[in-house]
Length: 120
Image (cartoon, rainbow, N blue to C red; front, top):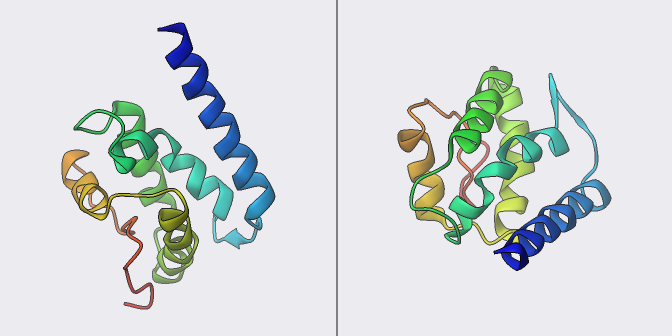
């Protein structure tokens, strides 16, 4: 059990390091791109299909927080353009990303899907 926790913690540290070093901190209205990604970090095991079959409460809280901050058309497009390459980079399962809003009981305005057209 301790080994699994160590690996999980190591994965989180590696992901955070990648976010800090590979993503610019451009402002997305009230949220930066790294902040948007950090909001969804608790969702990563669910989105990758390596975690539980349903998102955790921390995941849903983060998704709801992101949804509330991305409250204009432009901010939703900016968040989409931030999340789209991250979804590919982190191996997000598109089916799971599409289920996330329904499972979290929120109207998530920005899909975390590698194939989404951010201009629509």
